[in-house]
Image (cartoon, rainbow over the protein chains, first blue to last red):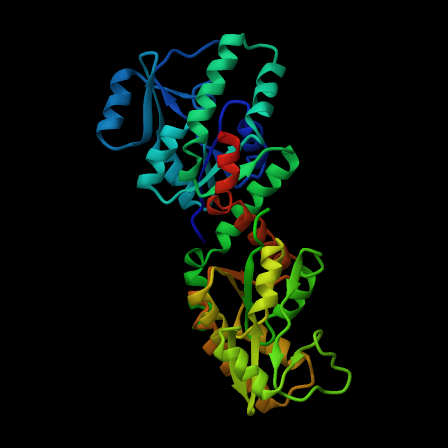
Length: 198
Length: 198
């Protein structure tokens, strides 16, 4: 059996990456990685579902033993991707999606065999409309998100694939096609060729 | 507008590559390249449809001016892929499929930006059944085709993608997914990223 694919899907807030990830993960062979954090659980959040809630000592111990794939610090708390669960799923032939920001993605891409996809808004104008359309963001937050989006999009060149989310169905079909195509890559099928030849 | 993809689909006789190519080429944006040859047209064969029928002098003149993408000699006649038509279609944004053998494919892959797909039978036993199932081949021809298949499959490692044709519909879906994914590759979308950023 082939190992699964390690997928990184990034994109600015409003790009629709969350929705796309959810639809892709409806496939029982696809798992979205659960992050670990040292922040306190909020009401309704379940350990192992929304996050793995770890003490600072436990997180730092895992960091020092290389058991965290990538991490960052936000408002004084650690956030990171536990390595063990990801690797176990991959070994079982499951594809694993990492929902991480661009900086985390670039780190993971450097050190792992990753298929990286950047979800791109069709234009900044459309992104702005989507962010305003939520009706929950203040003008200041909208401007901040747009600035962050510019920084993130300028790093899109580092990704393997660009999927423009103009139409959600098309974008989902493209991500699915990328997964199918990646499994057809010759380096994934060396044993198969040997098998036919033997 | 993006340039089209130059696709090479190879595979042994009985792999089903001809059927797959025909289905893929039902898309009006996909063209199967028409080969040029110096052999005489057979009854019913149309110039520009089945082949471009050229004189030996004309073919050699095109060869010497670099207007043939790849060629070989079979039974004293030249067979080759005219460059001009292929490039014109690519410039118009059409994808072009080259139906060429493994040796021709390896030559084209060396000198061009090509997406190469090897259509693989699930096993040699299945390939043998398919070749016998045609009922038109003598035992000698079946054995010869199997030997050729072994030589061709041993070169499958040189291709970008392996598509196993166990089930025709799945194989077609995989080739279509590869085409979609290749168009999402970041190097195909550099102008798009620049456009969003500007």
